[in-house]
Every structure is written in C-alpha cells, then in structure tokens.
Length: 196
Image 1 (cartoon, rainbow, N blue to C red):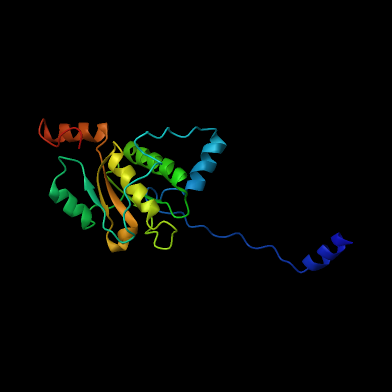
Image 2 (cartoon, one colour; image 1 turned 45 degrees about the vertical axis):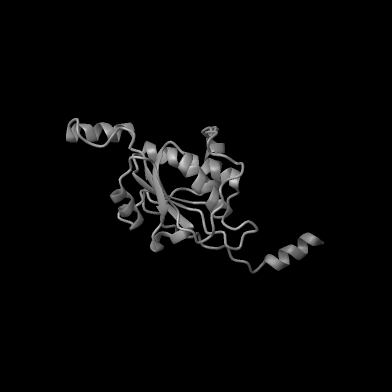
C-alpha cells in the first residue's frame, strides 16, 4: 500500500537537468576540508602529521575585529607593509568556516605544506571573525597561534577588506629550497638569507 502511494505521489516528477559546473581558476581555490578528507580516504592516504607546536591547548585570545600582524625576525618592515596593503596576490586560499578546531589545525598544516611544495609566497586563510560564537574569535585565535609557530610561515597580517578583512589573514611563506636556489642563481651569492 505504501509503495502505491509513493508511486502516485511521484508520477509527475521530472528528473532535474545536470548542473553546469564552472571550474575555479586553477591554483586559486583550495578544496574544502571535507573534500580533502574524502580524497585522502578514497586514495588510502594518511594525513601529514601535525607538528606539536600547533597546539590544541589554550592560546592567547584575540578579539573578533582585532587586526593581526606577526613576523619573524629578519623580515623587512617594507615587506610587511606591502603584505598589509595587499600588494602580494595570494596563490591559494583556505576557508575554515564550519570547521572544528582539531580538523582546522590539520587543514592549516597541510595547506601550508602544499603551498610550500608549489613555491607559493603568499596565501590567504579565511578564519572568520567569530563574533556570534560562544567563545568569540576562537578559530581566529588558534589560527594566529598556529601561524606564528609554523616553520613555513615568515609573516602574516589581517587581509585587506576585499580579501576578508579581519576575518582572514594573508600569510607570507618561507621560500622553498627551489625558490632559494633560483634566487641564488639569479643574483649570485647576494640575495635574501636562506631562511626567509
């Protein structure tokens, strides 16, 4: 009886046409956390181990609209000023909206590894402001702590308004070994120190 009712209810239903999907610009948008996990599971890949410095413990809290800025010693103020003004185009982005802290930590770490592998110099991480969260700016606070502790990060600042403002950060990556070698060849022995 239930089958007959269902068939009658569905008799006028027409299948939907497939959506036309427009692919994003290559190299600009990173897959979501769920997409990364699904791909890893399908391929039987184990996630990269997350360094112990990227804590899940307590971190210094920041406020939802605080402007973030941090740099390693040796990074020039002019470079930070250019980063702050959005002069460096992000090579990739990571959006952490809807992620839990534990999964976000792994996503940030793996995102930075991929960015380094592709010799990206600037990337953008959208963490949100967390104004309506039970603990305001919780994700933002953790992202700031993780980036300051990560060995591949030279600096970060809150993004310009068009890239997310205080709900995102632009990250200046440490040069990859290949980029450092290319720089040495182009400029001889002169150039930036190896760790920048």
